[in-house]
Length: 330
Image (cartoon, rainbow, N blue to C red):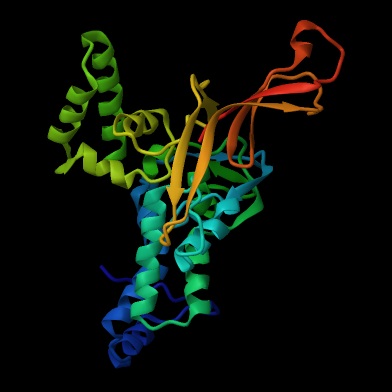
């Protein structure tokens, strides 16, 4: 049922005004409709996510909530690429014959950017506007906001509805904002079960691939869902990519914790651009000298490579680290 939400002294148009504008406006071209749908794709999904929450079943906790200022995403990008990789991705789309592909960018992300670039060409947009559309599709709009401690980034778009100066909705979870028809949890559970069964029954690699070819989730084959994973790097997706020899890092993320395993060998990967120019990417062990750091043991990320530093101070030594052993992989 349509409801007029216009109020006096509020900057809101009346429902009749909106209907008049729609009925008297010219019908946009098909190419223009594609561009509009592309630009408003995430906004439509955010509205749909908002109505997935059953607000009538939530409880209110009165009192000033404890807030913490953090850098959060205020926008879910259409193409989720790390900010430091947006420029290389844009160069690969605009200049494919003079730019070498970056191994840190997923193939599916590049395909998505090419589709968006093709829509802009059909609409005969200027190159500057096309670049702006592509950058906007990858922009997460990260800013400092006062939010609840340890709250999920998925709740940031509805922060205005769940948090106020004297109350907070205390029973909202990330699961409330997920559709029951999503294939992602089903695929993750399938990969977990397949991994355990492969260990117990000693199933061969080829048999595991045949199982993925013959298994469907929501009328889609598992091997087809592999193309929709994109840059997601949970442990289950990393295992599925490795099964079909897809490019992936050994780094996985789960519930905010990023972990990575130690590589066992050194290998070369050849990548090339549209002009046929190839380059070699080395993944393996590398020794780096004169790297000073105080004694700690942790995983760090530098220049797109997952590294692990082992400090001599693990053995109660007071010296600075003169040599660090880097475990580097693609």
